[in-house]
Length: 356
Image (cartoon, rainbow, N blue to C red):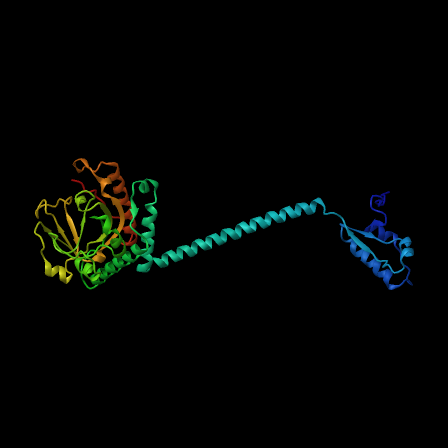
């Protein structure tokens, strides 16, 4: 015969619910309060974690005003509940990780949308281009050698001007012109004292210098007015103590050899955007080492990177094998990739390292 579970281990006055119900019998003529007490006990019996405490008769003698009601006490949570809590916590952690992953993905998508939106405007592309050039120049070996971006905010403004010039040439092409709109890299040398104005205003033609009220407005260059650049960092390094790596939008080119200041009308009319001269080898030579690339408008040139001329010299026989020259060529390649992305519709430029 199966024994009734003992309540001996419970405190005095406390019985398991099932045992208590078996023991309680309420006559029909008892008042409603007693029936309510039994009903509460039966309800508690459905909860395996509950026990019932009923005040004893001695308690009634002490204070007739006490409420002789059923008190339901809670057992400590079972190990099963602990397991359930751990499972819930694991589930909550998984849910949190899922939500975080979804938020991160949504954030990445918004960033990508913002990026694509910026690429649709001159201002947006100018910001992205300059930021990318600045980022690639942060390598410690570049910083150690004094290779630095020329600027940021002003560079963004100047980049916008080149984008606008490129768009103008592209618009002309829609009317039947065949003006090249490719942007490549050139080199320009200047004096340290000119850097602040170049950083702010860019490299300027004589007309633009006059408009900006610069003190130097003379034009004594062999090939006439324009912004002079070279194809390499060596050939014209005697023109200043600071070298600049610049983006150039050549447009329509005209090679004049050593012929001097020619094609003035065509330059003024905009039919020639760039003049290429070579004082050393004459008009019959295509040797580019001493080529002087003269841009006719200020918004065809974007100064991006500066370095000290003394780092590039001396170069034995101009063989380009010095460590610094190699580093500068590496930067040339990387900056051209950025220009290709933002100016040249992501079409890679085939590069040839110009040497003597």
